[in-house]
Image (cartoon, rainbow, N blue to C red):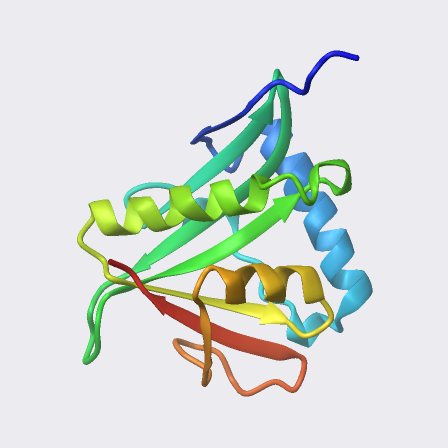
Length: 160
């Protein structure tokens, strides 16, 4: 049996057709888990430079995961980046792909001098919640334009 090729993480245009296919799969999953008022889908253009960044994870030539970050300037508080659109194909889960994507997103923030990462996620995703907690994210209240939602968890992490 041939070993799996290594995962490669690299910047990706979120409007690329393969990225759009993964985003559509993510939206379908979120729409199955949560009502529309609890889903906060970031449009692709919001994750393009300079206001954001988007990364893909490839195994060989196949795009198996993606994730983005949206940058927010300090406005009465610290500058931060919000992790958005993290998604990994079922067949690739448990292989460290999401962890590698998160490292790339956090790395982009620190390279820009941003020392705080935030995210909103749903309560019906125990694997994602476990990953974020293992990476050092802690719960906090709603931030930005989010309202309290019993189906959402808001988290943040101070970046070194």
